[in-house]
Length: 289
Image (cartoon, rainbow, N blue to C red; front, side, top):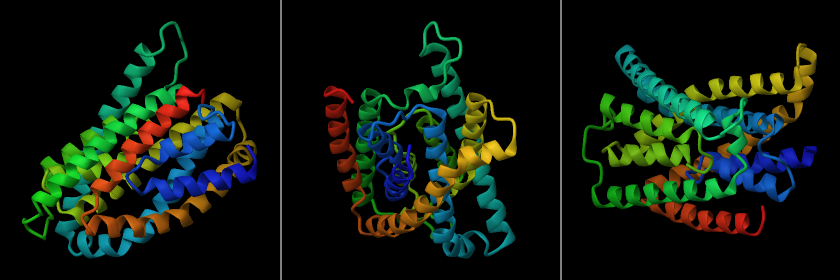
């Protein structure tokens, strides 16, 4: 993997991560086309570090909105922290349970199976993209026919809605192609949450989730490379850190586009894109990638 590969993947990740089109699928396909193996510890660490870059983009972009909405009073802050904890706990329980089940039953005869070994399977990514696309199209049609008419104070986001979003986010974790942001925002829309509130809550959840994902992949890399010193770890992580910075810049651009499309009632078009992408990924798998 060269520096050029890192920069290209960072741009792809940054532009796609904050759009509901599955950045992971786009990065994996890009890696395949460049002759890289998406399942190696180095590549999976790069992917989560790119997520970290876009996490910082999320914080910068949404900070003013979060401050005005969630930090306006102690009660508002306690409420959103509670909802984030509920959603994150459900995400962790369901996501980790699915990962353990896949590692136990999805690799017959393998003693050291890891879910990351499936991340390069285009035959699995294609149906995951299609499932995300269908969910997004349904949510987009629902939102156009039944515009939000609830209280602007909460935006329709309560414990029930946050729990449902957390559950769906957990289902996304093991599957490349099943867009996390697309699934969670769509779930919020279907549950009656205001568009802007669903978007902000989805990305707040991403901020809460990213450090755990980073830690998992750093440990996986240390185990694979038998890294014991901080200097060796820093050297191994250097390409990922460069990619993180590039993804941060690209993520800010993508966020502005996403917000405009959310507010212009064109959410369903992201679903159509995912369905087209699913066909394209299926074709790439058919021809040998």
